[in-house]
Image (cartoon, rainbow, N blue to C red):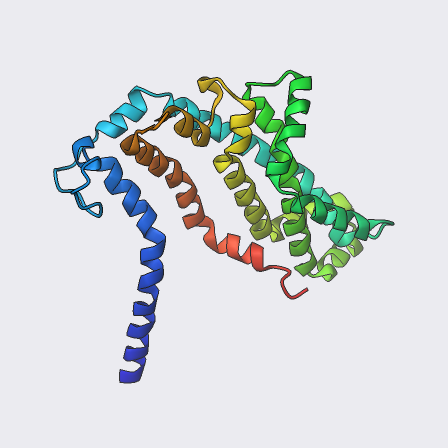
Length: 278
């Protein structure tokens, strides 16, 4: 019993450095957003805690003097709609690569993987020409159209790997009982593939939530910007940084993603690890 107790204590102590490393950015954002400007710009103040008292002026400035709520609604739109589009396209593509036998399946899978390896930063110039041709410049619709091109390859790879872990015998049994391919997908594959779907959905959602370069490249109007671009361009003016409001906005922007991962972490991990031994 003593040995087990010591082992348990050591295990918990070993986790503390990782917890400090993980929570320190949130702690820094929180205390910075609650400090007064006089303390923020005082070089003699201690940066790790609040000395002169808490203030909510930075949050009031962010919500009342900027278009933060508009940026938030735009971010939600350009995160959810491309995610839905990506899932609708990648799910049948992944199932076809994992289950159906057709000529060129390996080539298609390799092509999807090659597309995923292309850095997004290399494509914003040709994409900008496409957006200009479609007359969608300075509109969030430009982001809704572009984002799925990065979400679909990864989602297809994740879902394809997950489908390969599902027993094929279940689908064969369903076919013997009279189900066609669409009924198998609807009644069997979709319920069994929830972890993989959640993993691809979270990846796509986070990509749309945090992307910066395409918002800056395609959008100039403040009312059309997302959180990442709006806070960077509106709260940094020349060499003046509104650190309090920046940290308040960063904290508010991070909370939805953190909460989503907190509730869906088990599904996310199981979806990522699926297919690892295939």
